[in-house]
Length: 321
Image (cartoon, rainbow, N blue to C red; front, side, top):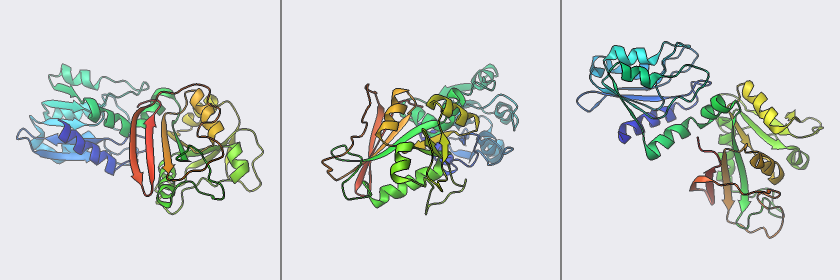
């Protein structure tokens, strides 16, 4: 099971974001002989075919009696495209393995139930593969279930936990800074607090990296005024209200780059979903700590560490997808 779902994940990952605002899904059809008969990912555009239909069309007659592996539960409703469950039934698929349930409360679910009622065996991904399927759609899942963007807090720190190095503009290395621009390009919005605006007057745009969806919305949370010439968008209402408004605007992902005060405010309200901490091989010896002002502990899960140039990137979830 895992190997074919891994392939479906890879297909969706290779097409990540192209179906926005719809989720990008991957699907693999395995024929009765155990070999891949067809595969695909969600097509771009409002009328783009879902991954299941792409994979089933590629498989043709070889799908009959086979197994469909898909990273998201097949839809059973009419939206911008016909129900994928119809295509599964028409193809004569005998078994469907689902990477994750469809969490969208705004559309009728029941893809699993409909397929089972038609005599098709339906299985669910387990453990790490199931988590990775949810992780791949973490922004969309949060947006459709909570009505706000998925919030990732990004920060660079020294080994002694400081967010600045005396006499240096940068804490992290060049490779980490480039990755931050890639994260901006992949986000619907990027934000800081007014403290950061007054200190640094940041642009928050994605530079020297591909931006196929254009620049993210660039936001400052807090009380103005903004510096003259700033292109940031000031948001001064309570954070929960502002995130809800951004969600209503279709913003699914927000990269938060503010300082310790803003980070603590988001964390204490339960509004940070994921943390990305770039740890640089430096000692500062002075300055603000990573989460100055945080008044309560926050439990994190799925801690991972990866090398990014000379730095180490720690990632963890405050709210798992």
